Amino acid sequence: MRIVDHLPQDIGTSALGLDTPRVGDCVVIRRDENKYPSKGTWPAFRGRRATVVEVNPDDRPHLIEYRVSFGPTRRRPDGSLHGDDVVTWFKVYELIPALAAVAPVDERRHFSLGDRTLVG
Image (cartoon, rainbow, N blue to C red):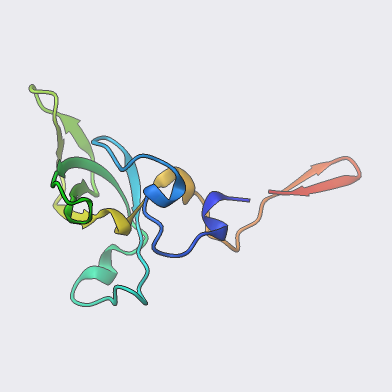
């Protein structure tokens, strides 16, 4: 069973007990669309994987923005990440760590151990 199976839609990384995303972290774009209705181009990003390439800090945690790249990324000479694809800004409640979203909720993997079957 995965971490996100029992969490509300607007989880963000802090609700998972993890630190907020850092530069280089792989994330999946997802948010609670009842609380934050989709409008404009937002549905085009739903469920996509991306890499955090920049953090726009603020003293107020709810205003921190994360710049993500959906394409390949590379390091600049100064050590910062650069996305070769178009970059987009998101709030923490719109990002979940990619490790927590490996497979859709209904997808189950069956492992056979002789006469026993495990569902994972």
